[in-house]
Length: 225
Image (cartoon, rainbow, N blue to C red; front, side):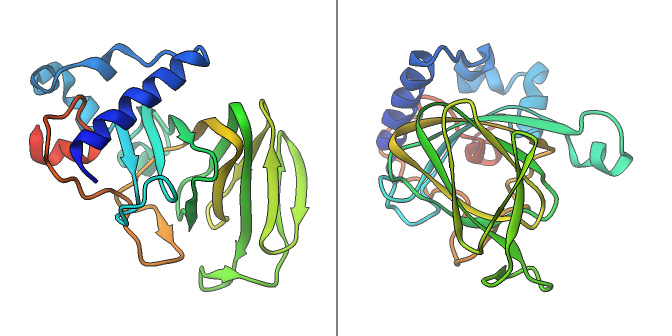
């Protein structure tokens, strides 16, 4: 994906967030030079900030996701069993734009439709080896109420509705009818190691540097900060 296109997507996403009354924290708009300052090292360490992915396939309109990590704990917190054990993201799934089938080994998450179209999730349970169980039913909590679906069943969430996904719950999702603003509240988030995809794809985009970045992505931190 070209950096110029990344910049366009970030501007479009920022406008979409604001149209729904969602305001990003001030650190979202810091220049790269400011992010290098010592008092912002935790932003980098916790991998907070802008994130877009086309899953390494270069087909953003068909397969992709916008994300912004607002807050995040650390693996050390989880290991200690105390401290900041949670994370929060805001995301945008565009109409018919697929976030492909995946699961997490550690992270439990609430996925919340914050506005726009419907959010549709395709769900599977894990088999004993961690793969997709194409036979077993899958049960998830929808706003505190258990909901059981057949393997590969579709769960549709309207505005304000949410689903709790536990480690091992396979899920893919997309917006239906319009772009969808999605909230995510979870245990500590680790996008480097805790995304297991059903197909051989990557978590991050490969960026072609044809322009200066409007904002750094979390995937830029290791090379630009």
